Image (cartoon, rainbow over all chains, first blue to last red; front, side):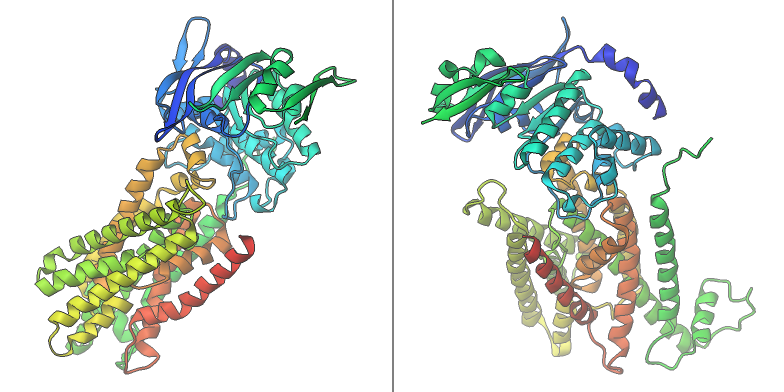
Length: 281
Length: 355
């Protein structure tokens, strides 16, 4: 156990130079097509925002990439220069060591401490029936430290604020030591300070060559924090990719207006120079 | 160099476990000495020692035949069966609560016990006693499927849409299934009963270990040891369900397969236990909640501790049942219901404030 933990920094560089690529992903709920041939590329070491109105299939796409839901068609892979690692065909425990998924509003009625919640992230790294080892505890505490939540370790998850809980869920994901981090609306229900703190944390994780794909609702927040964005548009035949690319190319009125049915004005943030979007009917 | 080992958090659970184990052994030893017949504790242990073949070594004379029969044929099997049933039901409760993410889940409330009773009663009426555990298992499985199916179907029509079965809806479905199975059990016995066999209706519906024999000990104890141990070893898997199915799947757990395997295990164990004791309520509900208050929600500690405490609990509940209104005997289910129903009400009350 200790071997995997100590050798990680070296092996990590060697194994993480690959992009997350989803190709022609299709999924239908009964007769209703939710995703219709969606292509998404999330480059390594960057934050890719998955945008789109309600019903455009953002969450569904994340669940498919996470392997939680089977698509009706399409491929999801980690692509290195020439080698591709098929994520959908990967054994689930190996996939859970490769990729972590933080879903929206995950909660529990059970009295669980923060440390125990984060230790769940070690599940795919140990025997199916085994309990957490001391190494697991060390890694879990490290993950909590990384998300600035170590002082919460002994608290009950049910007593945390929204922002604190989100940091704990991120720590649980980090305890999986993933190459890819999937986040479904990580700033949902958070106050502004907690939103910014969460996105700053996500950005710094990307800086450690974790590939981040995050579904986001707030376009200005996406514009401020993402490197790339993929804009999904709902349609009668399911969600499709309306545009994908750098923030400055996708978050412009010509692309955003028809997808959301609003009139967009793009301003410049006076200090960061990033786009800020405002909307009229 | 400082001690880098993480603080020994499991230590508390291990100590609690040893205390619980000691309490169970002590309870069995003491409970066999309590009862209507005027038997001194020394006489009782005397019989047990002789039967275990260590009587000569301890210098005991051969015990009186009447005393021997009372202790070895009546009391000891009864106490051991109660321990097996209590421990097994508590494990079933924990597993069901984790898998359905429903703090109100329990083999009795979700109708499994009543289903198992029905299966057992049918077989007894037909005279095929050999099939007793099998029929009880079939009954428990059918009842479980009916309850979960009904809860999911009832959920589909509602505004909730996808998720379907809320805890409340599942308990209501369990109530419907349980009542139907209980009515059917009464009917089966009513239709076929001769003389005072009506009393049997009560022992199936309320649960009782009054008629326990060494065969009961073998079936209930064997099932509790084998299936109970298997189920109790799945703590890590159950922990992965803490934040729901999606989170468990994202942690690499084959959610559907695990759920079905473990629920079938629960139905098997419930069937085996109920075939010997009838449907004893609330054990799977009270004990896990009480133990959680002490050691927290981690299943690796919760499962074995609930088993030990459940066994101790039912040993004493049954001792109460056979002594409070001496010489009358209550079905033990009345005692567990008297304690369990208020606990259930308290749980509902707490849910109300959090929902």
